[in-house]
Image 1 (cartoon, one colour):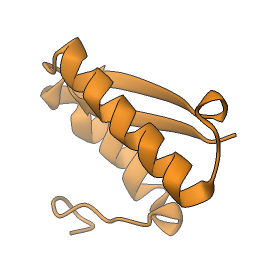
Image 2 (cartoon, one colour):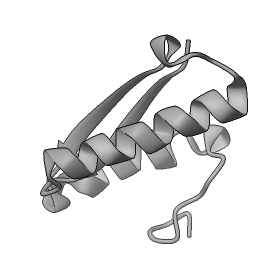
Image 3 (cartoon, rainbow, N blue to C red):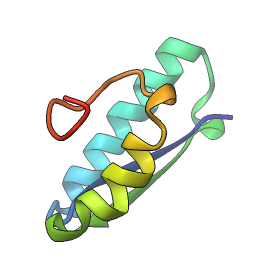
Length: 77
């Protein structure tokens, strides 16, 4: 039962968010073999001015041991 949480800069349309959701769902289904009813996805908009304090610090830097894809910016680049 994968749940995927996406945090990104605010400003994307609902259509773009739905397209991303569809692609992530397809990737989870193809890679892990789950049915679409087993996948949930949340998208959270974050203002650029709050990115480092609300996302980078707590979700990236403090969970470095859980990263499978490192960012190409900031202290971990």
